[in-house]
Image 1 (cartoon, rainbow, N blue to C red):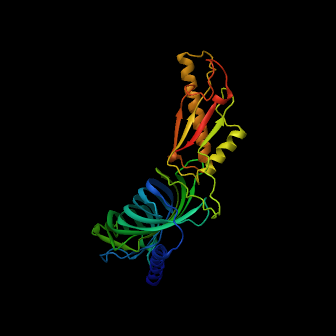
Image 2 (spheres, one colour):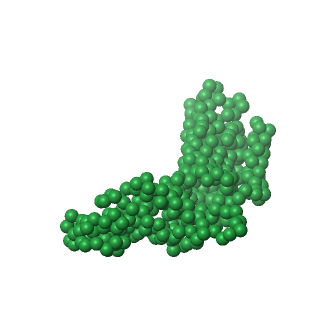
Image 3 (spheres, rainbow, N blue to C red):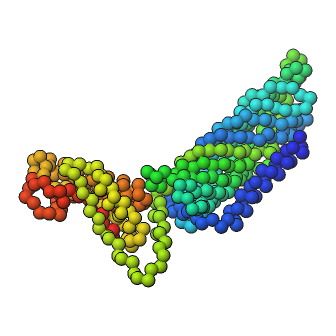
Length: 381
């Protein structure tokens, strides 16, 4: 049993060192996460067997085996814009005790072990040339608390033995992280994540325990002491979400050097709408797509998306007509913004405004329907 535990410990520690080595020597291009983000994940928790070495000979030596449990975590972090990010994390794990194994001792086991921890993590995001998936890896250090609430009941020749443990112990914790993030194309800044984590609380964990050996013998009273355990190694598989509040714009597309200067990109695009409609026609979508492609080469800091209507309201000149046209123009602008985002333009650089019929492209009398006034202007600034 000791040899098995030593080999398992060596393998898990080797995996953690390998993760750190990859972080140090990886040469993949970074996909930058910039600024503040939040993340959460949940999944399955797998506890390795823990060696039990009591500090009193009155308790049985052996090994605690655990069933598959649950894990969850939440974090808040900051992307440095160069592939590296740092975060603070709170985590929780819960695994049911399925068996206490001790040579020559038969028993049944009940209860569970819970872990709570706070970690500081450093991670690195990679760009492998695919815009739909980004691997990342990292490591973290912090403090973990292990709460054990278990009962062991002897069976067969040992049926007089009863043991109850209900105590917590904590210590230094560290973890290795490997994951994949998959951007959600219709929500800029949102990514789904899939993660594997190796997590351990180091040292020996001593829990206060009470036991009785023979409940039928009045002279055999309960005994108490510390029940020590070690080799607390946990493996977690999780699914989660991460949201960046200030996602980085896409890098400019590299163009071949030309002998003649490239033409100056168009800086204003007009998208026209049918009467009293805010949905995009096929022609309108093509214009928005052209504007999105131009955004990779145009020098700009903001994109103004301004919606307009003509003056053909039911009651032209009335407050009701003015409010209706203002709302319609804003819906048109928002429809163009959503299409720009779908075409790869970051939401954070787009400003949306609605002007109703106050800024016509073609001057008309009040109440006149004019197709050129039913428009959205995309302006690079």
